[in-house]
Image (cartoon, rainbow, N blue to C red):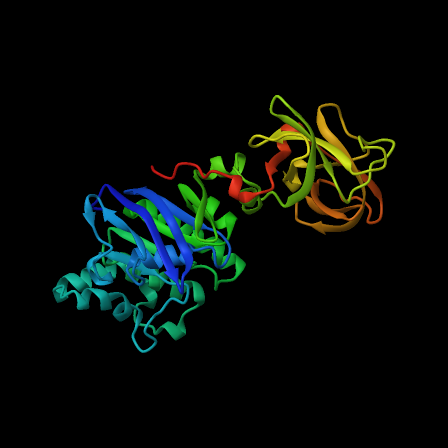
Length: 380
């Protein structure tokens, strides 16, 4: 469906009252890609999408579709489809009339409208609901109508702004699969805004993690999941344990850190009654005395009695909470003043003493200052 080779954002920025909501966004998107903009509320991801759509004028930079500049064009001349969080359906129009509306505004012949609308409704599996009003549909069905309305226009690019955030957990899973299926079967180019890292990982070919209007890292789901370049990105990629620490020593890519708020013990590698020492993998240049953040995934912690050889150290603590998650248990461990999160295949006793261990290569140590991080290249 895409009739272009690449979309380029060059130094794109948007300011409100002298404050940058979006600054210096450089990104090249290839035709057929699914790119997710990921970050918390206020990070600039929806601002970027609205600038692309033409709903907000740029303060800085330019947007080019192949070699043609389009940021000076009004929204209706950009040829993009948009799917909103709120669905934005006309409540007094049937499903088929909602889907047909954009084609009617473009002056498409009636016979062609009828065939394209029928095909779009069948694509989202709503054929039996074509004559119903939006109020007679479930939330998931209404979102399918919104998607059909966008793709029926055969857009060069589809922009989706947190389209699943109003749905319950099961519908979100179903619609994720549906969106990915439509993207692949139609050959769409899609830019998708979300704050949900699981959603982004399952849908996107590439992720763009944003913070305070600026890009922090761009890469494939695997690259960001396995090799985050900052603790901020690690936090979004499931490293639920983000711990402040101080570097004790660093050598050959490995770094030993002390975790304040934890307590060493005779059976651990604690520093004489001070904070526990851990050995991890340095991400960036680090030296003794540096303030850092340590990132460990819950699934990378082992809940055991003592640390096996080859681990980055052991943290003693007591079990404060156990949650059943089907085939495994989420375990909260209180280690001094610090709450740590781990996973276990069997449920430990609440209040019981345990030791958490993790392999050196799974303990990532980042500079504390985020402005010390240089984002990865964002061009395709």
